[in-house]
Each structure stands twice: as structure tokens, then as C-alpha cells.
Image (cartoon, rainbow, N blue to C red; front, side, top):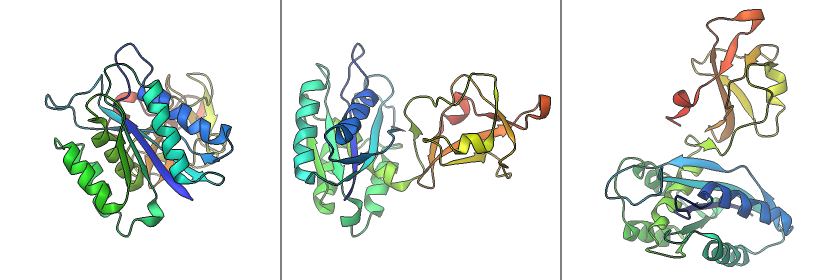
Length: 247
């Protein structure tokens, strides 16, 4: 069965980040041979004085296919994991959703989008989770992280928000790599241009310092932009972090 796992507010300024905990939890699914897990995506939520957060107010989400583990068993494991691994003073939230059981996924997607623009409450998050039959639980502190956890699941389900956690190892900074080589990378499902222009397999892409993919159309996409210098036949370059901030 397919599940979405989203967590939020597990860290403090001195601890491991929420993204690292999400990666560890995703890896444990395969470590314990419960199934397969995907890449982790980071979803930026609203930064506002009324919303407590550590540094950026972002939720982390990954999808997984459970084969040898009942979802309730995984939920219990994830809850214990957050309670033991989250940092002192954090307010961890856990969301586990089964997209196939959602009669209508639009309310969850709307909640995710709203969390990027509005101050939402725990009560709103719990009400929606109950309505949709989604697991939502708090595991320390005020539990305020349930808002971001539910929002992260909605944004991942929507398929057009978020950046993949970490930078891609695709070559050294400044090097030029063929598009077909990039498309064969295990974490890159497509290479597209910002302006919608066709990107051909034999085109060359100049790699920046941090090569990052974004979630678009439910796929991991490496976005490129025209290389103004176009030296040595290089047509494209990877987008800067500033350009990708809107994802």
C-alpha cells in the first residue's frame, strides 16, 4: 500500500534538522524490509510571528510503499522514533496518509496550500484529519507540529510544491553534463527548462555549486535555465538557490 509520511517541528537550533530525521525514518522502512521509500521533499510554510518555528518553518514528507508492515505498526514505530529522536523543546507532529483511501484529496491539498499563506491551528488540522481518515498525532511539547505535518502531506500530494532534500551528486561544480546523463540519475525523473523550451538529450548543462531538484507534476524535476555565456556548446545551467526559493 502507498502512504505519505510527513513530519514537522522536531528540531532546535543545535540539533539535527527535521529533514535528517525524515531521511532516517524513510531509510528504516527499507532497513526493516517493510517496503520501499522515496526521496524526502521540503515544503516551505508561512513564516509569521504567530507561528513557532526553529529556522525556516518547513515540513518534510516522503512517500513509501509498505509491503511487509501494517500501517498501524509503522505509525507506532514512527511515533516512538519521533519521541526518542526529536530535540528538547521541539513540538513534533506526525502525519501518515493513505492517498488511495481519500474519497476526495482536494481538502488536504487546499490545507497544504493554505499553510503557505495563513496561520492555521491545531484544531483545524485535527478536524480535517478526522474528516479524511488521516493519522495525525503530536509527540512532544505543544504538538504544534501537527499543522505543518498535515500541510506537508497535502503539498506533497498536490505534486507541485517542494524541493528534494539535499543537493544532487551529479558532477563537480562548473562541469558540463549531458542531459541524458542527468536524466539517468536515480533522483532525477525529468530535466525541464524554466521558460518551457525543449531540453534535448544531447544538450549540455553547466552544474552550479548546489544542484537541486523540485517537485513538479508529481515528479522530481531538475530545472535549468539558458546559459547566457553558452561557452563550448553549453546551452543550459542549473538554477540557483535564489531561483528555486519559490518552490
